[in-house]
Length: 317
Image (cartoon, rainbow, N blue to C red):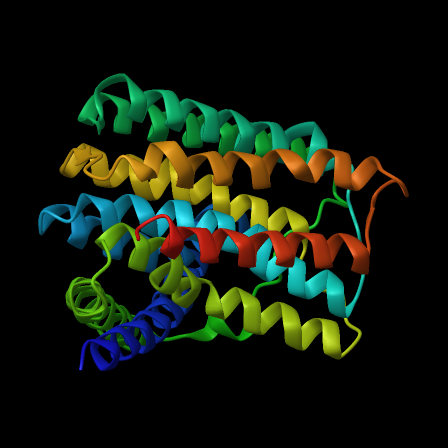
């Protein structure tokens, strides 16, 4: 029965996230916000809402390991699972902005998060505020840089949303909010029950099943794009998702409810894997063929991810 709650929770999170994105973009058009700003801030925040609700719900319910594992596991899955499968299907070229701005920010946040958690086995409100502030500064720099470089890729927006009525926006917001609320509750409840039934910790379920579940939308989108020989999901989008996961999801959650490290394996194992997956991208894009991620590299990423999943369960025993 716990698996049913997890699946229902994930379905509601996907539905709620989609309604929130559409209503947020439509509302932004109403306020005449530029497409560049909408794409880089509104859409990014809205797509991080499911992870935020899950982590917040878990922290408030006293399940800090799910709050942390959800983000750490999602960041690992974005690179190992989503990127790995995508480049296995269709190799991708890497934009130079990746190593000039996006990758350094992801790497810095990953390392900073490690030391914040290690310093007192808790992510407190001030540390959460610092993470959130760093994201705001990063977005300001990114938007200014993008305005000077018109060719910078920004997520395409649905132009038809400009004509959306105020009533429809309100309905979408309400549906999105309700779906996210119940989806996060059911997912956290199901994850806790599943951990008990399988005889493993909440941390194992969150860094594996919950994280994979919240990465399914990105995985589906990238696989479909790769199979159609279209431009696969950009590396920038995945790195951006990882940045938002740490800075906004954990940052905002910690400001509301400090997140404790209850399971030592989060620091001893999981976050080390997260930093390793982030770091390995730099040598991968320069060696042996510059600025390209091919099938061999995709295989290495996916194989590494499968090893991580195996060890997550094995270490518990």
